[in-house]
Length: 498
Ligand SMILES: Cc1cc2nc3c(=O)[nH]c(=O)nc-3n(C[C@H](O)[C@H](O)[C@H](O)COP(=O)(O)OP(=O)(O)OC[C@H]3O[C@@H](n4cnc5c(N)ncnc54)[C@H](O)[C@@H]3O)c2cc1C
Image (cartoon, rainbow, N blue to C red; front, side, top):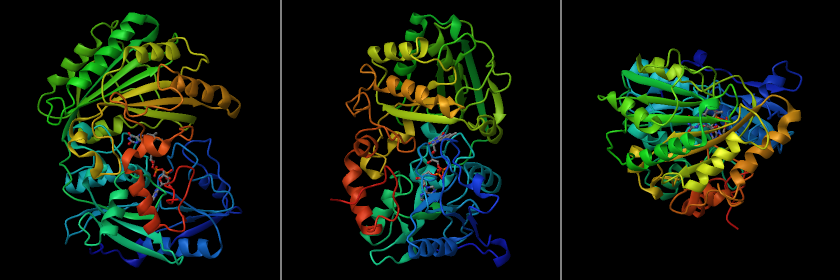
């Protein structure tokens, strides 16, 4: 595979940031301010050769390595590297097309905004990735990345053709290798498979992702928000909303559903006098009337909709949202950007194959409307899922969840370290309520289908099964072959076979 022509002057020469450097205190932070690292140094890399050199030097000094793409990890897998080296790929943010192979290249430190804006403006194509555009492709794609175009176009990894990855062999030698879906060596094909949702920080450092057959980017998107003042929502209205929402997606998430162009986010913050339940809806395609059909069907029992007054979770209000608006798709993507000011946070997730069982709706009501600890910035977000995501067989990628119709994200946000315990205990109490998932989590049972590796949660008891299900042993074989010394490790990295 040929590489693009870049003159030597274009390449960032690399920089080592030790504790004495004024940038150090910033460069050791995660997006989540709970993660403050104390590595020996942060190594900024500008190209693959520099990554190889950085890994070689760290190993020679006996230092543990962690890898940072965009720094948005929900757990402390990157900054949590006391006395080690954080290899930071942010200068490697190029997005381009290889003229010979026709493949699209995204460098390992690119943000989603680099990806969307470059792919759209230069080539008119896109990746169906996440809504927050400061998220890095490095963690996002390796974990399977999904977003508002996923019902229409699937997951980001469904377009991943090959990766260039810096690995360390059993002799401790560092090398960059490019592996593709159609590599002749089965070990190489398995390494590529492991990058189709096996999670970041496990096998090596991805310096370039190569994508093929990217979908054409939409020209326009239709956006609609309905916000309901929580104080006006009664218990029975809530039960109807949750039942309708779940049943709608259970019925309308088949591959080729006429609603595949619809993606929705239902934000359910804790109830208070100034919070709102917000239904954010995007439609791309030829039948924008689907948007109103959906909103009216799902929310018909709710009180009158109002304009959205404040961000919910990491989603800002979209201006004048009471009516359906037609926007340039790239602008709509910018508007829906899910990045609010950085706050301390804790997250949990679950996949749903079917509508909510009644006991779960009652538990959701209790923990939001009658919370054990009151914080109006905490919420449950229910994203639509399915359609084209489910066109791929479960074992084709390391992400096995290919029959779900909704994805849930439990979120708690706060500012002060003194509030950690109360917030953590609220979100844990909600998730582990025996009417939600109990202590074992959302074990695949025909209604629930485990958890999303890109929303990692160190509280999970059996994370190997909840993230990867039957694919975990194969990920361990890949680990044994490509990272036999377990150089790349964190609290939930793939374990070597015992
Ligand atoms: C505000 C916000 C919004 C989000 N929205 C979405 C969404 O809409 N859809 C969705 O699917 N997810 C979403 N996520 C989750 C996001 O996809 C993950 O947090 C992702 O792992 C972040 O990647 P990163 O490179 O920014 O993070 P990092 O903290 O840099 O890395 C995350 C993990 O990946 C590893 N890693 C990073 N780069 C590389 C690399 N180049 N090679 C190998 N390993 C690497 C790290 O070591 C770490 O283990 C969101 C997260 C946040 C904070």
